[in-house]
Amino acid sequence: MLNSMNRSKLLETGLGPSIANLSFGVMQRYIHCAQSAGLGMLHTARSFAYYRKIFYRNQSAVQVLRELHNKTVLDIGCGYTPYANDSMFRACHDAGIDFYGIDPLIGTDISFGFKERALARATGGSGLFTRNAPGLARALPATAQDLPFDDASVDEILSSYLLFVWIEDEDTLADIFEEFYRVLKPGGAVRLFPLGDWRLLDFDSRRLHDILAGFSVEQTFVFGPRVMSAMLTEMTRL
Image 1 (cartoon, rainbow, N blue to C red):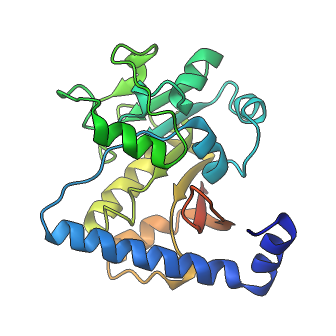
Image 2 (cartoon, rainbow, N blue to C red; image 1 turned 45 degrees about the horizontal axis):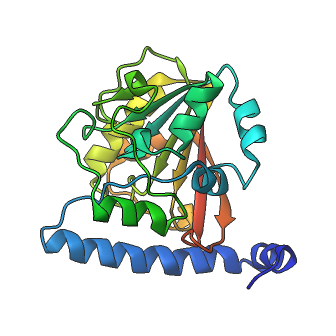
């Protein structure tokens, strides 16, 4: 198992991004096979602990909630997360933070069966759900291309296993990032996980390229276990 010193050496030697590219490539091939077989997007719920590790550098719950005080945060493609007892959605609701779950799945006839509980447990969650969970008024049946928020009204956008993963079409990505740019405050951030080395991405769409030019991009290597070794991509609205 890698300790913190060895993880630092991975970054210093550039092996971190190389490992991220390899693991992300394997995952993409798996998803392409699933899509070719006609399988739809997997909807799951991830715990607050999981989100703290991949989006907030493994800070404590207290530190993350303090950082988000008086901020508006969106979780794009949240799946079943608003119903999970140990989710960031629930933690932010209990702390009085404006945290919204965004997914067209919300409001449909959902069920919490063996598959949903198993997927939640696979990333360290409890697998426990509440159908009438607290705070569901902030779980919105919307798409990333049409967010029900005013211009420059959002501080942070989180998205896990969605953009550049299940959604790769460049026209769709352009629509989404254009909407992100609209709702984010100047200096607001998009946090995406997982991804490989951003510098290796090559877009054919001029429109997507121009929209992404409105963000500065930084990446940090995130190492497992219970988390895919990949890059956290932080995009700040200029």
